[in-house]
Image: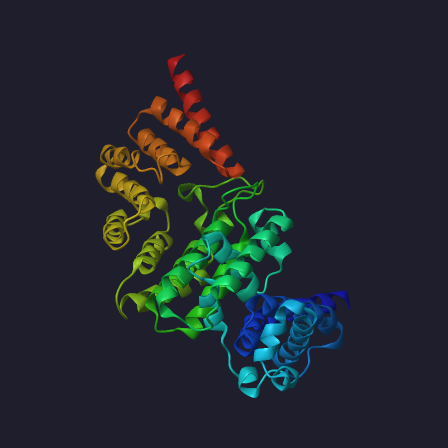
Length: 415
């Protein structure tokens, strides 16, 4: 009985997360007032989460949610005296009638996703609003995933909704915002794949949600090759997650991972996606990154990695989307193809770039290359500096351990 109840609850949660953006978009389409529509949608979702596991979902769950959310929205509009002017411009009969039939049938979820990436919002606000409005996650779930207090996340979401209220919310799939949408989904995935703070290496809830939303976006916009590229990149990268940590939660670098633990299903799906995307149109940054991930994933061992091909792809990526972190990653490939000295020369130029000059990854990469060049003293110092700058506890511990390892090796060699 308990197992069945748990299964039913999970099925209901999955259904609600799928329907959440459809319901919110329907209310925004009909009434505007994004901030009120979002709150009404959340109340309807909560009511369904409580009732449906016991009573079973209704025959038309989407219509049920829209009807309940509409009632909550109308109640709020009536009780809020500041909405009197809106009621004067909206016929009372239209309010009482509930959502129109075309609103019930039309799915504006894609337009809602684009709307949540409003250019007036900061990236953290876009992320929070996307996960709540489109992902259907509660404020508590988003806060837990990012490791911040629920009150902090609630304030972030509230500020985002107020900003949209002041500037206006446009419910249309403005394709000029596609790069911003993809960037937000990429940031969510990146935070889930390598947590920037806290005790965990990964936050699967975030990376999983990013994959779900990108897969959904790809289904709605199948001809957008960069959407396919981003989905492929996520799948090919997330495939390595089972091998990225030891049982004690410590970090396992790529060179030491047990590749038999990699998710072959995700690798197969991601490889098929990127192969099709690369032959379907203009090649963009996400497709190039996915191609790099595919080359890594097809290698049975680190020694089997086709580094010249990876370097060639990084050359293209630097031309398509110049970025100091791209240069940092390219330096590793240069070190494998042309030797660590050539790669270290590239890092010297990055030291003047404020975007990366104090980032722990610059020092960690330098340490790796210095060790390959045989300069263990300098490598140990670079690892220790990287550990001081790292905000993730597992990364900090790993980098500090690497520094101590080299110091111990030099000490034993001198005895």
